[in-house]
Image 1: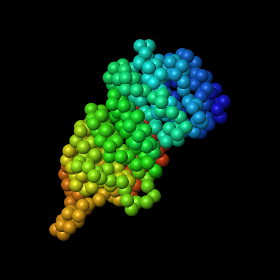
Image 2: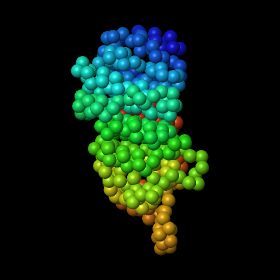
Image 3: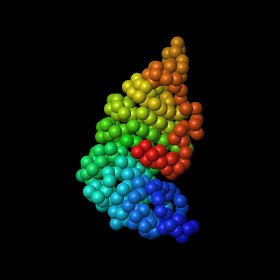
Length: 318
């Protein structure tokens, strides 16, 4: 199959979009060398994603990337997107990159290094090269200390999706995102597929202000917020709806993630669930209700599949 794939690439004559996502053992580090220079020079979108590449191997090298001078959209494993690649993309002979999708997977972080990733100066240079550059990141089971290294202030981050089975996102990370990316952020997704549903993590724990409310307040372009597996207090959900109003097109929170404080439950004259639905609907300017089960969430798919689907739509925007 590898040979057949490389034959297809070598015989291509008008290829603008090449998207290879999680095709186990089909794409290899030498696959792209099958493309002629004329095709590589005119390619507009390239995605190469595979969590199963062993050791420090990558599906594309910096030297290979130099051939793709017309690239407008790129999707890679975060550990494969190095400082040298960022430098290549800022070269004068490359057209400005407009969409960059990066998957940060715990398997890659374990076997590869974050030492070669772009620093803040590289991100500034990329943004200067293309003022319309926007970045989408999905982080899967990534520790907070690694996320603090990854989230450079100058990334033009438009969408971020946290997905986890083991490692939960901290309130400090959410707060950092709301402060650093307030001018760009439109999509924020928190998924925690815990087995034990008796105690979801509470991002507002021991904080004066809830990080999700601050996110809604600071990020004025926020249009999608989806949460499962983290405690979302009903009064905070109402505050989020009021802050963003009709600009928040999608607000998805699973029913099991919503909690009520004792004061709301003690008021026997008001049904807390009915009041929540009514107040959030008023805030958003459209009918709203909690998502009854996780499988009804629009973002509920296997993480790799969701990233691939979102990356496609994100790139098609241009």
